[in-house]
Amino acid sequence: MPFRDRREAGRRLAERLGHLRGAQVVVLGLPRGGVPVAAEVAVALRAPLDVIMVRKLGVPVQPELAMGAIGEGGVRVLNTDVLTAARITDAEIAGVEARERAELQRRARRFRGARERTTVRGRTAVIVDDGIATGSTARAACQVARAQGAAKVVLAVPVAPAQALGPVGEDADEIICLETPEHFLAIGEWYEDFGQTSDEEVVELLAQAAGPSGTVTEDFDGEVRFPAADAELAGHLSVPAAARGIVLFAHGSGSSRHSPRNQYVARSLNDAGIGTLLFDLLTVGEAGDRAHVFDIGLLAGRLAGATDWLRALPLAAGVNLGYFGASTGAAAALWAAAEPQRDVSAVVSRGGRPDLAMSRLAEVRAPVLLIVGGDDRFVLELNREAQRHLRGESELAVIPGATHLFEEPGALERVSVLARDWFIHRLARTHAQA
Image (cartoon, rainbow, N blue to C red):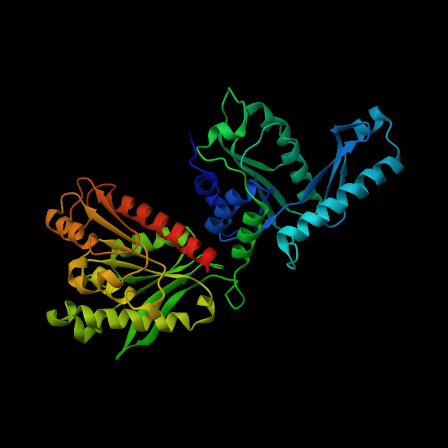
């Protein structure tokens, strides 16, 4: 099976659409199954997400035969060849359209609520579905987006039979399809999990993409300074528009916010639509004192202070927060996460020393992922023992052949994938349950 579920299909599809990032893009999911796929694409492209509402206009005596399609904004696309062959009158067209437009408007209100439709005029419309069988709906969606004023129409799907893509190419400027099997029976055979997408899930995904009131609608990326406990700290804050969460990084001993390893992981999270705050836990003067480097209480206090500062920003309003800690920074992250007022949604430890926060581990309620190199044997045993003290959800991920700094080929990339997936699912899950 090429795809685990629609979410994974969306992330893989987004990798092929990276050339569109920075363009004037609107991502449009075909309800219902296309919306979970489109949600991942929208996050990766940092673009707004909406549904594209399309209703087929069937010939009155043969409804399965399309004589056209309608979309929002009064858009109607007709197939003149079918109209002529079937001798359809204007009155018959009007009757079918009235019925289908009423249903289209009902479904649009159901999915969006009070939100307005996102305009595609003058922009690139990326139309996403979970797959194509015949291509008729995809063609209609492309035609509708074009009629609504889209400057460019891109159709993106995880799977489709090759013979269906040819006709769609007449209506799309670009087609991205990951799998084009020669033997195609149904879209569902290309997914391990192809459960039905509910109306409720579509509503929730659109609401999450719209973001809570008070969040920023543009990316923020820049240097910041802020008070944290008893010091003023420096950091780099990067938050995509409508971020699905923000992760604070707590670096280890002898490191800083300029750590190439943490920056690598941070970029992976940013690409997945997750904001990051990399900052120095200690001032320049303090960093030279080894006693401060291993003062976990002090480091945790600074991390807690940074968390409180971040929560007070408008761009973080209603956004879930997570911690990523390395080495001694992981102990600080777990220590701070044990404080209920911090309300942290997920924690990831890379080569961490959770044993330095052993007395607080039983109080951590956030889901914890412990990532350790298989050849970092001393730290691996410390993590195994620490996991036994965690009372909430936890996993220990061992990367074979990796040492403490994950310098081996592919090791750090594996860390970033594990961390990204952990935060994506835990931050989104917690937000949905809140």
